[in-house]
Image (cartoon, rainbow, N blue to C red; front, top):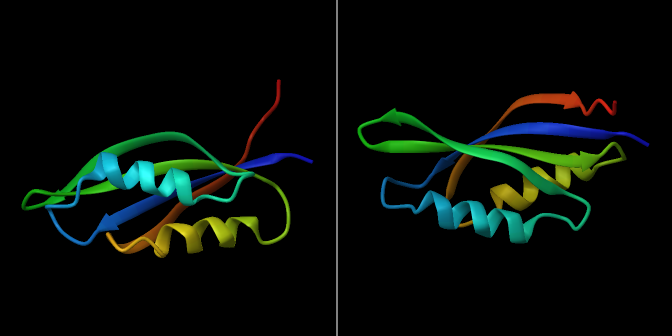
Length: 91
């Protein structure tokens, strides 16, 4: 079974949200089979930044949906957008 990288754009509730802390909270809330591959910040407007995060999950059932639910359930998350979904190539 392969793996999939899902790219998310996470919009925080406000500019006062600590994105480093939010990243850590999301990492702890993920299902045990999922892991963060990469993350970065992207300026949106007026001091507000989004958290861009790539999460690797096994290619199985509804695990991708569970990952998105775990992100959305965080109190500091306003909205979540799926940017990409691609298979991990094993060389």
